[in-house]
Image 1 (cartoon, rainbow, N blue to C red):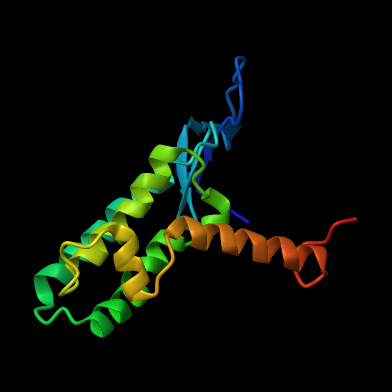
Image 2 (cartoon, rainbow, N blue to C red; image 1 turned 45 degrees about the vertical axis):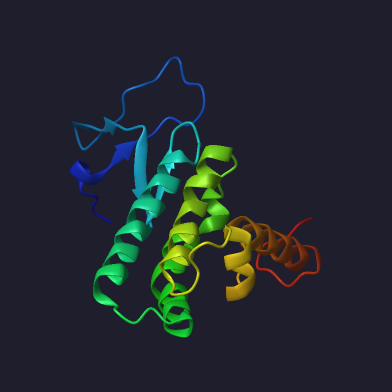
Length: 164
């Protein structure tokens, strides 16, 4: 297999004080601290701020497009749009970059807060009341539920991941 040396990069994960220089086909590989792989941002310090910001920015653009183009913001229509166009961006590969800092969790939750405010007849209600009316969970509750499902599958041999 022939590799494109210009597209190959090196990322030192963890505390690397003595970082080495790597070469491939007599070309020096560039060292990066962030890299996008399969649509997920990975950082050398393994923090989740970059994926959180990326997902939030992408979903805010989609929400803006929905707000500009949909005039009749009925609950049923908006929920369908949210579940099909917005939430997949926030939850894509979430088990790999699940945010653990409060600021990152709030950034992600801001997406759903903005969405719930866009629906007709929801103004003046608190976020929790809007979620209850829409029969939605917070995004953190959805992440926790997904983690519990994965643990259950792994413990009961229903996952491809095997524990010895």
